[in-house]
Length: 248
Image (cartoon, rainbow, N blue to C red; front, side):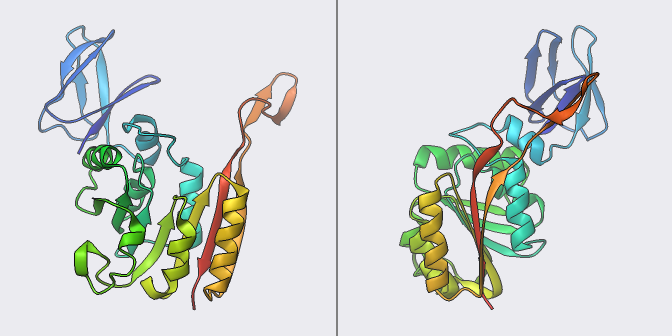
């Protein structure tokens, strides 16, 4: 597992035994380093060692595209209620931020990524995040495996507690989701486009989900200065749409 080296407003994610080179000096991260330790560069600059957490994954994982925002991951976790010991089927791994966050919660994740290069990067990110033992990154299209609840051909060997999707073919998985989910399980689909979101919601209702809810994920920062307080006018508050369905 990698560690975070922190100095003032700077932070660097590095594995034990590797080298850090910055304008603050060069250092080799000790093999036996622990969170709370301090390490010093050859210029005498001291860094504090911390255990990386979700916001650090978002900032420091190697990216293969635009990763899901931490706030959206929080909504997925909050609406599905997954936790320690649960099993999740994920698709559209990408950078792997969501899969890593679930792994940090003690969830066992099987995640599918169609692009082999993206999948390879995601596996490396799981190692960096210390969750490789909980997150199984598989290369392939999840729709080729949703028929495999019996465990054939690398499929899903038993019902899962939640399905999380960030893929264009999400409706095809949602249609089969009731057969893949354990009692009371949920499906959560994230999409940047409202047209795709509507299709997912309609498919979930047709598939027999007891509840189906869609929200827009939007957030505004606050600015405080001597003139007063107001929502920030900078940046984009909208990130996408989240549809969550739950079976009985």
